[in-house]
Length: 266
Image (cartoon, rainbow, N blue to C red; front, side):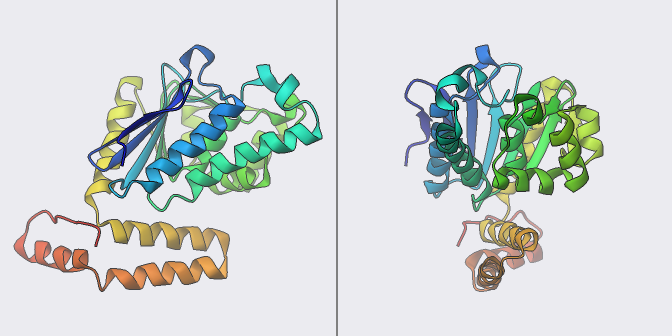
């Protein structure tokens, strides 16, 4: 399985090391705004991380000073010019959001600078979000005269609550990092120079945990949020499997021996 990958034409990069996949939106000259092709490449990069059995956590960030300015509005006159083309564009959006949301391993967004529109949606699809103190957040659909996919809206509602989801989408208001912290959209606000180090620490802590346990917990939380019966049944199956795993044996033994456990994911 490849441990490094760059999308053809650039824009999305993937690197895997120490059980952590680092996925980077790499278009800093455009504040990491995504073209339609980049949305597809983002989904492909996430799927490649999913297909790598060594990956236990995925960390998403942007190159340069920003996380992501959202979709590249400069190409809307061609790729999003009417209802038909907008549906195709929305499909690429939704596939990227779904790929992040449905990853069985935890996802972390390390957010610097601008996190607008589709960038906000990418962050909302992640499990854990951290922000630098210069981060800014907005969902400006109402100023563009368009609507976001309902699945992306579900991520936003889950990430910041229904009232703030309404406020952000109705008004296109901008939030500071501290305001995003106050509504629970991010869990920590850090100095710019510390954001990636802290995100890496959290990813490493996840990578050192029992993979089956983490996957079962993520599935259970997802089932609680969705209320879907099949997802609940799947979460129960994953939870039950942990008690038959070698990692459960290792966890108990490490506790008795007062040492760090060495979890293998089986």
